[in-house]
Length: 405
Ligand SMILES: Cc1ncc(COP(=O)(O)O)c(C=O)c1O
Image 1 (cartoon, helix red, strand yellow):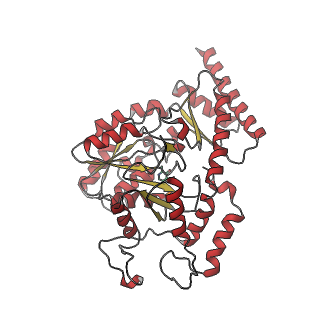
Image 2 (cartoon, protein in one colour):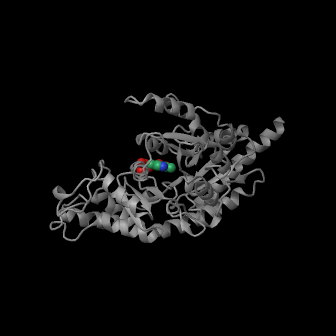
Image 3 (cartoon, rainbow, N blue to C red):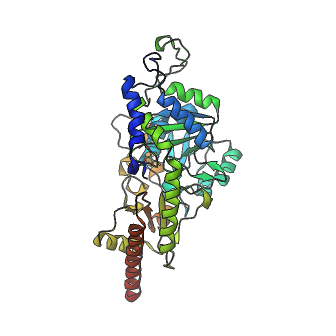
């Protein structure tokens, strides 16, 4: 996910605007900042670009998820349903508000299987959190209808799918709230940063205060602000917002390059009949940051990954099944509930119970999946070479397997 690939004078110019005033904080200092409000400007650009009513910038995607959950009133006694394939930040945020992460299996969309969500619902369920992994989306019609039927909140973790859409709506703007990450390896980056997007005014007002120690931002100065509730500091700096402001202007270009490269690589891999591709509920809305593909068995997939490694072409290809960050199979710290501070015993027991369930349905998908990151800077020649090398490795392994059988 490639925002960092195109660092340029545009980012330098926005950052220099801030450096010239010396006002690095997003709030206050109205006079000395001489009209430079990068965070505000980026929030407006986010609302316009993605079509949401409100945007609250924060210091990271993790902070955005934590903020969104607090703003939605999720906390003690609540359960949040999320997929077994995500980034650790998704469950960290649930834990940070004192709620229980309840994992549900993924299907060939690489995110929540709606039937698994239905089976995970209990009287304590408060929220369903689809994670639009690797640039593409969950089956939002099915999940929205489950949420309506059971009166549940819908929070989209769209941190990895900036610019993707589902049936005409941008990912992250469909549920009660949605989040992006602008960390260094996201489609657009602030170096570090994130955003909560929502069409609900109450959620926005809560997010605004929560991320700045509960300030209501209505006083004549910060000292005169009231604090209607307790908040924390998840503020973004003006320097980070400035980088994001330059990057958001490049988003359409990034997306069109990604789509072109993704289509070309997919066409090459499609020449191997044993390869199938991730199911995309709305193919036109794929942001195309990754091309995710499946082989027939885990054994073949492992052999292909090993051969790619042997031929030194594994970089940029992700076998999530063995990845320590992204798939539940390797989250021993969660399964054993290893925390630095004591958790309430009830929460600790629930966390361990839910993280240690049977995820064989997810294993059957993830054990056969490889995701290839799509580069922005690939030349046509590099893309062709990459595709040919991948196809050759896959064909070689498949023919070895046939000989063995
Ligand atoms: C799905 C998902 N959610 C949340 C995050 C957290 O974002 P950040 O790194 O900005 O805290 C990430 C980051 O990789 C992510 O991939």
